[in-house]
Length: 170
Picture: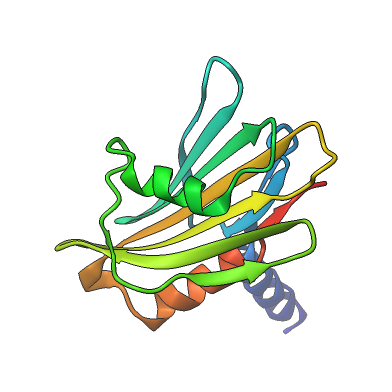
C-alpha cells in the first residue's frame, strides 16, 4: 500500500508539473519578461544586426505568439508606434475589429485591440516605456494569433493569463 501511495504521488507531481510548468522569457537587453505555459514552444528568435529590434515567435498547435521589442533613444509616441506596426506589410496584420483598450502604469502604458481576417483572430498588445530621463526606452508588440475556428473563452483566458505576466524591466 505504501509503495502504491508513493508511486501515485510521484505520478501526480509529474503530471501537475508538466501541466503547470512555465517558460519564462526574460530579455535583459530589451528589458522585459513574460511567462508562457510549457505548451508554447519557441520556433524562432531573430535580432537585427544593429541590435535594436528582437522578435520571438512561440507556437502551440495552430496558434502562435509573436513578441517584438524595440530599443529606442527616446520615448515613442504610442499612437505613432501602433500606426507604424499596423501598416507594416511584412507583419500582415488584419483589419482591426475592436476599439482599443488602454492601459496606464507608472513607467509604461499601452493599448490592445482585436484584429480579424477570414481565417485568423488576433489579440495584439502594444506597450511603450515612458522614462523621460533614461538613455533608452522600449516599445513592445505582443501578438496572439489563433485560427477563428479554434478560438473561444479558453483562448481568451489563456491570453489574459499570459499578458498579465508581461512586465518591462527597469
